[in-house]
Image (cartoon, rainbow, N blue to C red):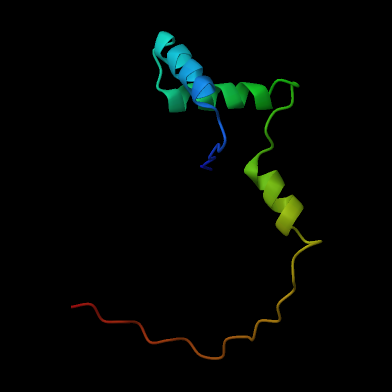
Length: 81
């Protein structure tokens, strides 16, 4: 999960949010999280699955090819006991 710090928020705004959160029976953090989530999804877009984001940023287009050496010997099994 990501963290967000909001700097420069006026005391009046923070207090108004705290009061709204209390009226909703929530912590200020939970209330802000819900408000930010709703705002982010307001345009009807759903968040992209993690696998799609990984493909976008780390997929074949952005990846690298490695030439791995073949294994010639196997290690001896470890005796436990």
